[in-house]
Amino acid sequence: MEFYEAVNKRRSVRDFTGEAIPEDALMRIIGAAYKAPANDHFTDWHFVIVRDKEVMRRVLGGVPQDLTVRDVDDMTFISDPVQKESYQIAVPKQYRMLIAAAAVIIPLMKRKVDILHPSDLSDLNCYASVWCSIENLWLAAASEGYGCNLRIPRGREESIAQSVLGFPDEYLIPCFIGIGRPSPDAVLTRRIPVDLKTQIHWNKF
Ligand SMILES: Cc1cc2nc3c(=O)[nH]c(=O)nc-3n(C[C@H](O)[C@H](O)[C@H](O)COP(=O)(O)O)c2cc1C
Image 1 (cartoon, rainbow, N blue to C red):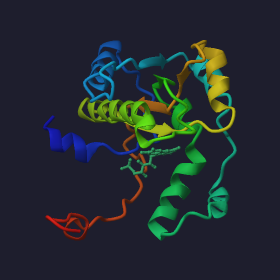
Image 2 (tube, rainbow, N blue to C red; image 1 turned 90 degrees about the horizontal axis):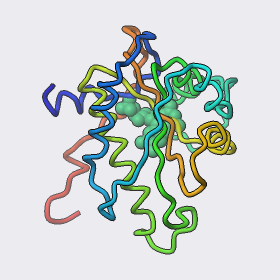
Image 3 (cartoon, protein in one colour; image 1 turned 60 degrees about the vertical axis):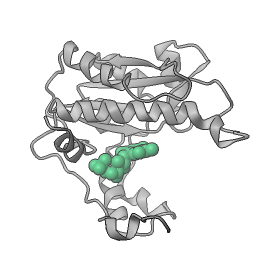
Image 4 (cartoon, rainbow, N blue to C red; image 1 turned 180 degrees about the vertical axis):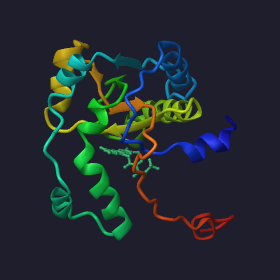
């Protein structure tokens, strides 16, 4: 698949067919994650792939299962009708989009600094780098005909996943990634249009 086709095809997919993903496809997709730029040259991320439904259930034990469209009304930061519609589609699916995926991929990054209390923007470089790898992974999945979604763990979601997966304390989960074959009737959110002419500046803001 041509690069821009993969970029355009990459969307958050929260509805899957249930088809399994072969191991070699997962290896290629995660291989692409390691081609991402990295701040300190280490690319020392790990990826745990969970395909066993029972392990998935336990890993996702902290993800809320009872969210509804009504929870979106409490999100006071929402300022746009398309944004609101997107949350109304995504919020009720937070658990389902992961448990119904063919696999849940859990990236792990080393906590080299206290990223919750950075003293300088560069303290966040390791976090920025792992996100570059996640975007590569997501684009590679799109180019293989698979779709991904992601959820940022909140509250005890990370510690519950850690207790199941057994990774050392020095690692942090930036997000859970659900991956699978998009269902033909997968609901994609509308994107807020961007006008490049007003967003891109030449020589001067
Ligand atoms: C940093 C980050 C955090 C996100 N967190 C979530 C999340 O917790 N749950 C979710 O369903 N989608 C999450 N998303 C996906 C966005 O909702 C999605 O990318 C956005 O609505 C644009 O839609 P698209 O990916 O289909 O183009 C996140 C995306 C990013 C980049």
